[in-house]
Length: 57
Length: 245
Image (cartoon, rainbow over all chains, first blue to last red; front, side, top):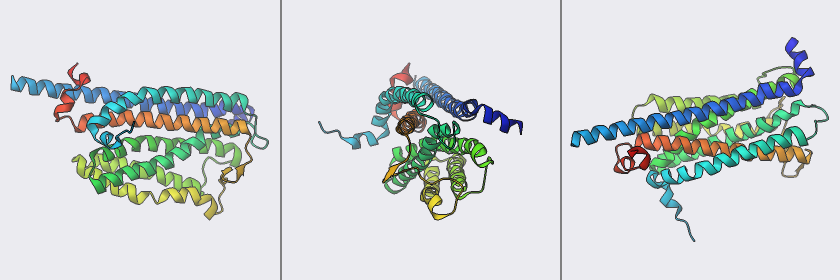
């Protein structure tokens, strides 16, 4: 009930906190995960390359 | 000068092209998002019936449109991978799925936030809402099925079938407001015109383009990791500058 009153009195805060902040947080988490995944994958590929080179050497 | 597009259908050439395009798409998405939000919150007037609450539209509508279009694009890529056995198509389908799922979630979440002040309920088992929820489950099913099979090529084929069959849900979502009596409103923008204020339209379309550019950016970033992972045994990957450094 108190949320109902608060959202009626502060519609813009309700929209920003509830919708836009959540959406942008999701976007930020997705970008962070994609960047992290790339770092990890690059590391794995580098390690594999080094292992192959040391085997050949 | 004619561009040979088939050249970029191979992971070897697409990897470099995607790397060059990412910054352009990312910066454009950020700029358009700021412009869209400015128009939406500063320029556009309050709605006569819904007051300030309608401003959720600038994230809700683009998210909903993206969730449906990304599913169709994902299914098309998956089908191409299944029919023509093209490696990059299946990689693109896998790269699109998480972004599509997030847009479907944002669509449902912001819809609930909008529904509470307008309908008095966070959720109703309305045809539009339920079919959008099924779309989210289809995305999650695609991701889970793909992750549950160790061999990537077999995983691509299995997940592709699910994506193709699931694409029937997209027209159901779109036409649900026409086929059934729903609490969810029908399309405001039609081919015959719209009753929306021009500033509201500008804000919505700017945010729509921003969301498209964001989705392309993230998909390209993700597909580059998938290419690296799957092609790691090939010579061209070991010769990449970022791998050597």
